[in-house]
Image 1: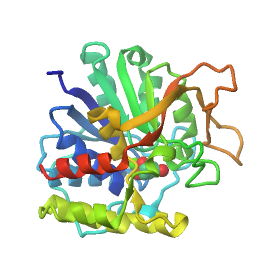
Image 2: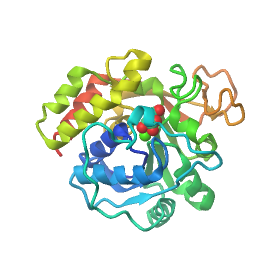
Image 3: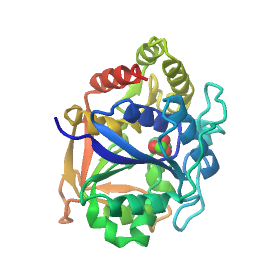
Image 4: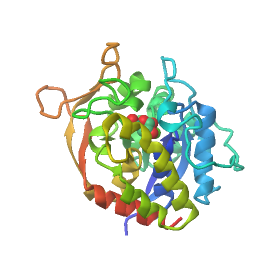
Length: 314
Ligand code: RIB
Ligand code: CA
């Protein structure tokens, strides 16, 4: 019996982030959530830290420490995505204000301290939003870089190109300098780009299977999916919303569901036209050294079967 992967979730909830957090908290055999760190992204930090606490309370896990991290990208003005997630970031079902406390420590300091205290290569970072907190931790404490076991992140796009601009995926676009720091750090990285997340569409049947769990978590999650799909259905004509962020956690639980290539991925940080583009050398045409496992495919129904079964535990 292998030990559960010890993870820190860095997140900007976001309905899809909420699915990821719930999946992680429902899967103690495979992942031990050491803490949840909020970052500014889909909505401003006061809301992402509130939403992270709401999700932990929904899962019955008031014991999970939730921290507030950075409230803006390293060098740029924050760009948010209320048009996708609603003004609260968790629009859909009405939610009560959280009562669990926000931790007093800054989320970046929590990341640094946790990695310094743990044995080398035993902590996995799971960023689900802009990479600001991770990059800031590496800038503040370069000694932790070699100690990180792995980074499994949602972000980027190649064949799918952009969702916030014609060229860039939102998480990378919001803080491209942070993404560049993370991808050039040398930490083993697994990327869940739109190429794979656009294959996990929460169709009506899949959402109804979640609602049919008959639990409060199932009801709330289904109503989040009902709200969250609007943007992608209108833009792509898809038959549901792509559940981007839980692919990160599902990869840790069931990596066999996913396939990809270990390739070079670099970030555009100079051009205004293509800012935040992930230039993924999928065809190996450059001599740039591979630095990320870039996931391109998934067994979508297997993903939803796993997600639904685990949500049923909460
Ligand atoms: O582009 C999709 C990503 O941006 C997801 O993580 C979503 O939650 C938003 O943060
Ligand atoms: Ca997110």
